[in-house]
Image (spheres, rainbow, N blue to C red):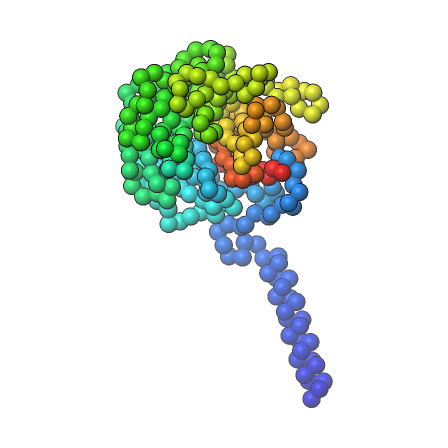
Length: 326
């Protein structure tokens, strides 16, 4: 009898061990996506997360991020979709009345979407989707390059062709008689402005012009007032790495800040992601070969941040990469 119980217990232990091994090596476990692997808490700056590459965004045109949620625009599908920070889709979130969304801007008061079907409009939604609570347009828009929303619900639009950054209130009406930044050289003036990001009381602007590849910061309350990052660096236009190699911007496409106020600049021409201190002092090149991720990002057009994690969209490959800072 004892021998029989012993044999039975042994069989149960062996079965449990086999089941554990099967679960450990089962791919996907029946789900439609796999949770990315977590990195160590002391992950070095720019460490690329193996398994944190989300590659089912074929046809994605733009993305933005807030509160740990990723918003992705698909113009061909006429849809904006929301995902968790681990890449999992949120299936119950729907943004209605969209035809060809191509640029997204987010803020604590909502999400703004540029839609190009039958004319160029901006539609503003709650972060949880639904019907737009505001739809407006401006006859002077030619090609929207970036959007942002501040804590008061004011909306900011950059136009790459007309070379201006314009501010609108929560009703879609212009806030000022002149633009926050208009065409031209110098602080407070822009050429081919693209990505926008609200940084407190200022607006970060990525400019992607052949003669003006840079990022600058302007006031959101005083039109055409540029604010210097420091006395030495009035504008962000280059970066020097640890080996004293200088990288000069070539079509900066997007800009954001992390929870510590560090500034991240995505450069489409270089295929690189750069980090600067809140004062604009060069700090690091994030996707360096030493970080273990892709050396060059393909058609990198958008960027988002959640705490110390940075997310980038490669439009060419339909991939969102996640980078963990320190």
